[in-house]
Length: 399
Image 1 (spheres, rainbow, N blue to C red):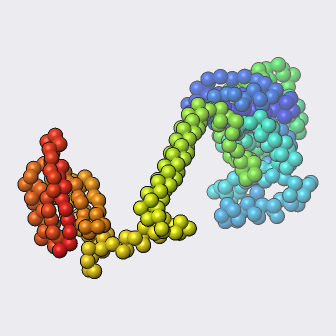
Image 2: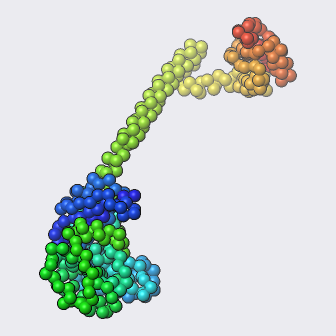
Image 3: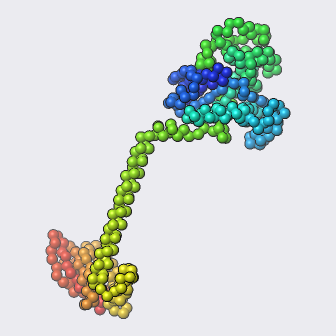
């Protein structure tokens, strides 16, 4: 899985980005001043790290409770520590740690709206975003200092992190080192900044890691980027990037659309053909019926007229026409060596004329015997050979 991580420096308005795999092997990197450069990168996930003094970090002690309860109580715990009303901030907190503390990150909603809009405009699906000071995994008792000219980030192990003006952070660094018991000072410093004397700010001897620029800093810290929070939740959660989705799946969607189009086109043609055939059949049925029965009223439905005629046809008072037809059909079907070829009814003689197809004359005699035992008078009519089969007429009356 390839991941794109970018560092957005809001002071210099530059974006440094790196593409790596799950083992942090570098695939590509670069710097840009626009998010549009990132939207065409072939990656599975995008993660944002932000460098800005407008992102506030607080660590507060909370009683044991569920994360949702803690989140609801944080505004009341912070309202006296902020210059602006709490409802003007987008607030995210980490889970309560073993010391009973939670890390809280606050971002002005105006800034979050601006960031969110930029992602939408560029059609960029960013999975997570966090301030740089909350994105680096630093060992305990290590003071981590990254100087970006006028602003800096300082992290005291897992206890405290802060982004502010460089001079302010340097003046308070020694106090933090002592308070959090740090015994190591690691500093990332622009290799061109040779005038800074760190010995005047702390007794610890710094381990200096020179960097060329933001991109070099990002590359050297790639393996320790492990955000503690994600600001892109709730209304700022990643959206489906429809443009990218439709582009990536354009051939599959086009093929699927063609299949549906052909299917529904064929279905429509079949429906129209069936409708046309049904209409023709109905018209032919009416023609044949009224030719045979010209005195029947034409303003009554054909189905009603046919049912009326069928109800009047019977062999006897005890067995109607349809019941006899059903029994005869069952007898023929149950004889595996015999098939029903055609059935007609002679109203004048009150008898069925059945054409059956069988393999041997013995099958014909067996069928005659079965029908006779069912209470019918059976006569065998004309029989003729058709290939290997015998086609024969049977005259059937109810006895």
